Length: 595
Image 1 (cartoon, rainbow, N blue to C red):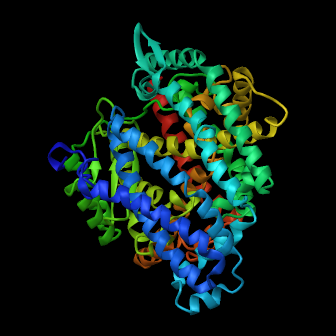
Image 2 (image 1 turned 120 degrees about the vertical axis):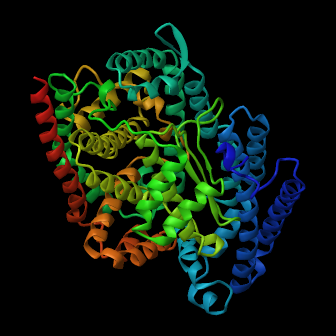
Image 3 (image 1 turned 30 degrees about the vertical axis):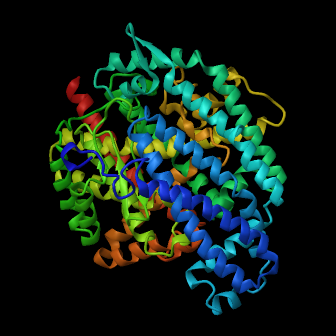
């Protein structure tokens, strides 16, 4: 694989599963797991400093090996879901690491019992940047089960929530949708929501709902089973609720979430106004039908080659920061990116950091549209975040979900605002503003609906098995609250619970509010950039660096931001409201011209 065919180069990891380096690392993984088991057996007899020193060495080795092996297998599978060898290897690795759960539990419990972390760090047993990690282990200890229970739970989860999640993935990826006489996949029919032809969008929407109805009860069974396991686990571990567990894992205060949600709620009418204006522009009375949520408006038909996309993005990023610009240039030139869609390749886009190489790998399904250029900017923002976190020691590189969208969304805002500022063509300007508002509507209205829906499922599950009709009712209720009169009451999407994989994780509940957090946090940071200019750049990098070694609130303080203050969130939302004002004015102007 190389730059020439615009696929990514995975040789920085391995040259295949038969690569001697891969086989050696796989054997080393077994030895590393055995070493952790021995350390767990010795833990009670070791001094605090000796324990931490040995644990850091063993953990860094294990994480490096498992991370490198997993990344290779997962990237191989993402590029080709027909790669059965990659799928099998991922399962093998999961099974191997599940055997380490008991050792983890023993060691975490012993580390959590250390009374004087300061003394351990002062002894040289742990670097200063592991202070946050060691304190986090202590904070997590009160939610830990016994060693045997942790090992049992890890084993049972493979055939529990993880298996139910696989069922949802399998059903939604294999169900055949009858669209205009052809049998197509669910992802394919959902992609037609972006088609410029309104009849295609409407027919695809109706076909999607009919197709979902053929698997809805099976997927409902999977969702009920996963959510019950999560509730039972929270009770066993002592979490007040799945939301409390999510916030704990995110290192985020409930006060921050409350400030975010209440601010979003206050600004919903502005987004409803945007949706009604778009509906009128498209010839609808009242609210917007669901199938036109992603309908293109205005005129921004310019397409880009990969090389043109590179020059466009590097031109913008060069004005912001040389390091970001150079990293993006390397990503294009050194085959970090798998660009084009093809049979068997997963849909969408993602970034994957590769710590062993100090690089990232990015998957997209690039077709040359400006939207795809924005997607590249987004994913390469993740890569830039990776680059900052790699400056930390190996066990201090992981950041929590809310801040994970910071650099990616900041890149989006930077590119979109530049594009809008540079155009004088009203049709192009309308298209660009609407594209930005379309995305904003997803992180405000749609994310809010997902948050409300998941909260209602957890609320009802202890007393009720929710069949497909009941889940659809809860989803429509959530959409009514979030979208209000912005959507046509008789044309919403009752099966959003079925098609969104984020609900189907036993270990990651409420995978929704972090997107709203990231979108608005990045927008607030962009406002800081407009205010401070070049002085903002080092502050921004320090903030990204801090995301893996402090809470989200302490991280934000680096930029002088109080996340528990609604004023911060409302400032970002007001910037969207201002754009909605301009969009509505332009839409009214074009609607009048059409009449």
